[in-house]
Amino acid sequence: MTRIDFYILPQTTLDARLEFACRLAETIHRKGYRLHVHTEDETMGRDFDDRLWNFRFDAFVPHHLLGEAGDHPAPVTIGWQDTPEPGIEALLNLHPEIPPWFSRFERVAEIINQHQGILHAKRECWQTYKSRGYQVEAHHLEG
Image 1 (cartoon, one colour):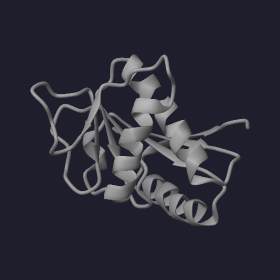
Image 2 (spheres, rainbow, N blue to C red):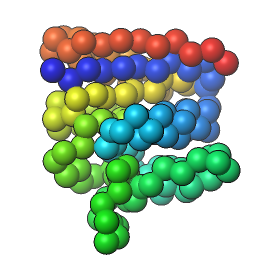
Image 3 (tube, rainbow, N blue to C red):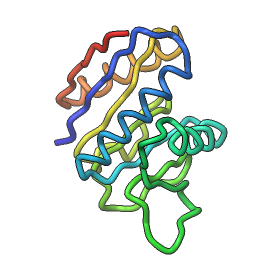
Image 4 (cartoon, rainbow, N blue to C red):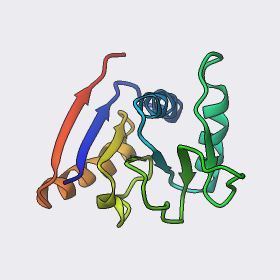
């Protein structure tokens, strides 16, 4: 069954949430998982794509936007509409809602910051996962 991890940040900004998402994507990639990052819309997807290139000078997370693949598939994909290809083990959900295909992944990561809109949306996600019987774990992070 899919394992769900919620990472709870003390900050309120979208920048802090996306910065942590970059670090988490790097960690997931470094552990050998193929990862799909599901964003709210194209603007967020392209912003996250740019951030992955620039978040640390000594980091490299090979990635591409869904539908813009090169000759070789990247271990990290970013998308906002399309269902990712089979064989990806982890999902980083930056969308306010749970995608209908989340259960195909071994692991799902959700990031909560202290912005009221995110708090409300992710509380609903937490309750949905729990009511469906999924193992949910919270990780409270320090500032």
